[in-house]
Image (cartoon, rainbow, N blue to C red; front, side):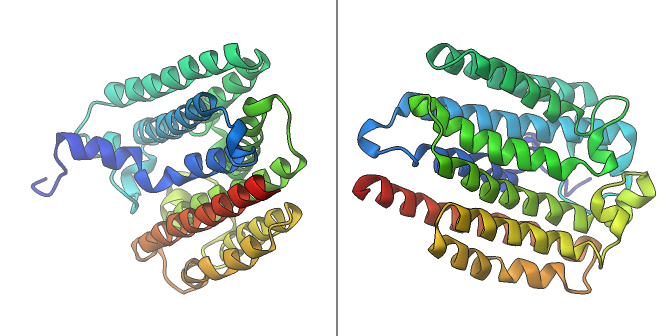
Length: 292
């Protein structure tokens, strides 16, 4: 326990900073579908707060639920608060509830400025975040995690953010939601490929665990294809080409014979690729909105 992270750093690690691009990128993309001169900055900031709070809360919720179930006893991934026993499980659960509360408060404020229908959307997002690994029958344990990520960290985040700007949804928002959703799914697969052996032992039946380490590599490839399709559908040819290039290091890792702890770098490559592609999309969309 001498190498255990300090009181502050342990919480930062458990928040899983490398997963935060999955929350930020779709918001930035959704915002930049609007002309800069007419951009509603306050609504944009509220959307970012909601997305980040939901992501961090879901990470803490997963930490708590997996920890109390014993799933993380054979984990090879990043540090977890509950499984390490450095922090009481109840405190981790309360931190998750706190994150969800922040998202709810910001969501109510945003709904009051736009549409109250967003309250319903936000409520489903909170429930989806908790029941991913929480509750008696967590859907993440049965191979539905990718669907949740695609919907909420892709379509809902991108389309919802665009809607809060002028209460309309540009047609490109749906395609870009597909692209950002599959970026987030690539992050999920980076985790699931690494944890195949441990998840199987713990009875966690992710798609990767069901397929096995080698066949599950194709799940990662499907995510990259989904990103390209979304970019092409949004008529962002440059982004589609760059997507293939920036994900090549991650694809090589995914299709390598590495397994378990040897795949820790896959999450780093995936997060870096998402940031790079997200930044490119932001620039392209901003230029198009300004000159279009």
